[in-house]
Length: 395
Image (cartoon, rainbow, N blue to C red; front, side, top):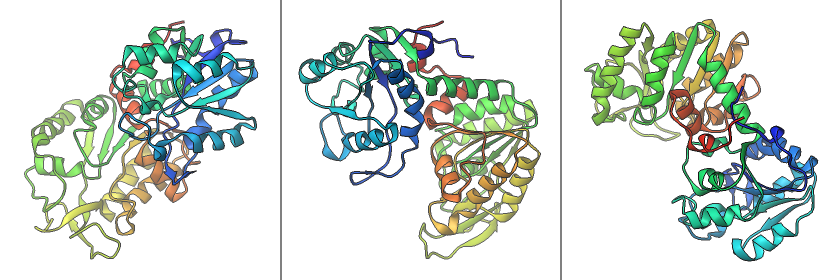
């Protein structure tokens, strides 16, 4: 159980409650393309509104460079949220010390308001004390329900929490409890699956999983840095040359800890990333010059699936290849299928592209838990501090 106070531990009736949510969702023009993160925040919003709080929601969206930009407005999210909640959500924009402050002071119990994109102000990312003060002036209580940004030391995740009574939302608490309990003492065999482009993005997670996993399966672009660390050629495949020594150390650590670190034994290679490109399946020791590895091959897929089928706990973060392009989707699809089919295991999906892959192949309802925060979930798994969580009040 979380050691942090949650919204259930405090009295909220009649209080203005500033809730940091994660509405950083994909947009197609002014249409929300995926409302998963909005739906994930609904339990906390409904709890507060049903308990007569005056709910003020705030979030960032995209990277608008610290100034207003219509393409990053949260107005489309406000429309979707109104529909999902079944109650009107007021949209507030303008000067926080002026019109927005007045609007929050005039709110009624149970009313819900959404502020404009926090990153329209440069003070959000720089954790400017004045911007944090302006946000805090809008409310009596602060709630962080944005697990996806809990690893950020920003004004809305840490600065405000230092100025108001600060507690966790239901989503944040559930994310932290699930990840720490399931992965802190996993039922064995415990299989970790890591993919994506770069070793550098996940080195902390690799170190941690080598201490806890029985098997660690590595695919995606990051596999080629490990393959290069074994002294093999990789053609034109992605390699982080400055991380080869670190990858070699991780291979040695795997031997020391008894964790089997499994790399691809065959690969799908091609001259370019394109729907109509020519592909070849080659062994990992036979990658031709001029071609790049863009997916795990069928023998690797079968090997990885066999390990997943035997697992009692699975943690997956990162695709096995460029799954967005049809010639290179097979490896990720087969891994998603294997994770989904093992209904005896606790399966934890670490956000980001892994979630997108599950949705693409129709397996999102077949796993135990999907994290809403890729970067935050990785930090939590590796044992790093989450500033947004640390800033909240303890029970």
